[in-house]
Amino acid sequence: MPLSPGEIDEFLTEGRALDAIALDVMTLALARRVSPDAPTFPLTVDALLDGLGCATIHRPLLRRWVSTLAAAGRITLEDNVIVSITNVRASTVERAWRGVDTTRAYPGYLRRALAQVPDLLTGELSPHTLMFGGPESAGGLDLSIAYAIYRDNPSSRMVNEAAGEWVAGHLNSLQRRGRIVELGAGTGATTESVVLATQHISPAPHYLFTDVSEEFLRHAHARFGDLVATAIVDIARPLGPQVHATGGAVDVVVAANVAHNANDINAFCAEVRAVLADDGLLVLIETSVERPQLLASAEFLMSGNEASHRPPTDARRTSGAMLPAVSEWTSALLCAGFTTIERLPHDDHPLAETGQFGYAARVGSAR
Ligand SMILES: C[S@@+](CC[C@H](N)C(=O)[O-])C[C@H]1O[C@@H](n2cnc3c(N)ncnc32)[C@H](O)[C@@H]1O
Figure 1 (cartoon, helix red, strand yellow):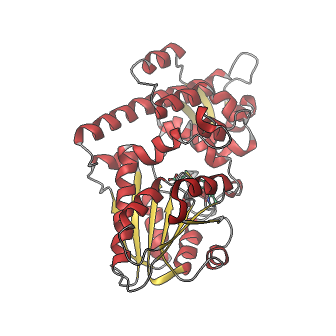
Figure 2: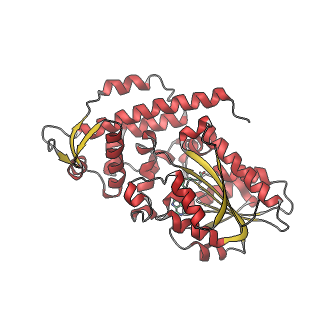
Figure 3: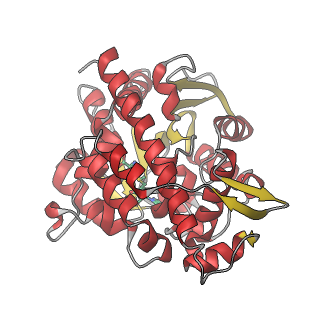
């Protein structure tokens, strides 16, 4: 269904309200531990994180919180030492939640995540359980929250639909049976759009749905049946042997919200280029704005996964960001040999505010 301006506006307005709440909760969480029996200001960031009992795997994320809160004027840093944290009242946060419909999957999830931030950052609460352990999880995964994030909101609908159109356009121009490999396919939110857009292409493309997690492959079997083959592929390991072991030349690689898990996005793009045919297409979906609502919830999942246990070796090593910027993706794609890059939404589209973009990166003179 086409996106209406009203729908987009409502989504963006709610997103801003959720960011404001998340910023308050992050400030509150850091300030709360600076209590009479904890070290007082000035305080090094390490001492603050020790005081919070921050788990080792979440320390890079919490450092990111500190820089985000400093940029927002919530924390004052002098020579990298914290000299003050703004006072936020818990009642302000409670009041702000009253304006949000938390019966819906995503705001409800965010409310639960923000209420449990102290346990998330110590590692006592698994961010995986928080996202996938809902009432429908019996014996598997409850995908209702993940669908709200990766499939159903206006931003995801736009980039997933673009992904389907890009892939279908490319396969239609081939004189052979196309081969698609999707990396980190997870819930299948992007798969769904691509399968729908390519279903009338003859001969039907071969679709390899991959993820590092067996759970998602089981779900894909149930959801897509014979429309996809499945395999474990870990982007932290060399892609060529894993992808070529399962078939021949690859016409399209789809990677939706997974590539930031690579330690080095330059190496990742080069590896993808190497597995693609010489007229191949990479469809990438990535978010490049680390919004407070992400920092305080889903980003705990990123710091907890295996690939990111190793610190990044790309530009994030100095920026401290967990999500690469648009300019970093563009540069990585060009350096890897992709020659044309289309990106949606365009910068002047309202949905660009979310920071989530779809990229169609083509090799050679491919359309
Ligand atoms: C944020 S989710 C996005 C999933 C998916 N594209 C979707 O639309 O639902 C990230 C996915 O990447 C997978 N993932 C994480 N690290 C990975 C790795 N090193 N190699 C392959 N997949 C990975 C996760 O299991 C998860 O399914």
